[in-house]
Image (cartoon, rainbow, N blue to C red):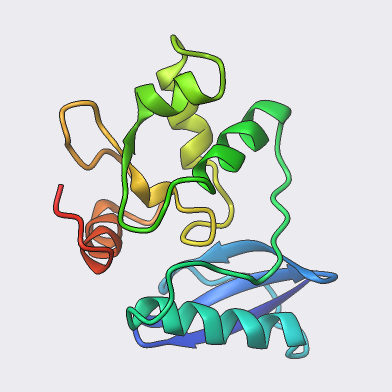
Length: 152
């Protein structure tokens, strides 16, 4: 497992690549571990993430693999189905994973997402339309939502 620095228009992200997959993405200011050689997957991530942050890309093709519990994986799978420029609530997400009374547990799974942006956890809002939390901070979440044309 190697870390790569991913230069983008919004700063330098850190990504952990394992084999042919991105398994973790950290925002600028949250460095990863020891850097490894630059891989084709890291190069592809750099290109796709930069295109997204410039408003030129709406979907990612870089392969990802997020380890987690079966419940977390179910939540992250549903996150991947939220289209660019759309949002849902934690309650709606809980219903989509078959646990309509588990909005709090869903929120914890969303917060544990190791590959934000690629698995678009920023598209989940509070029931009243509030931003809610975000692992990298709510300023990042608001900025990502604004990029997609959403003003919570």
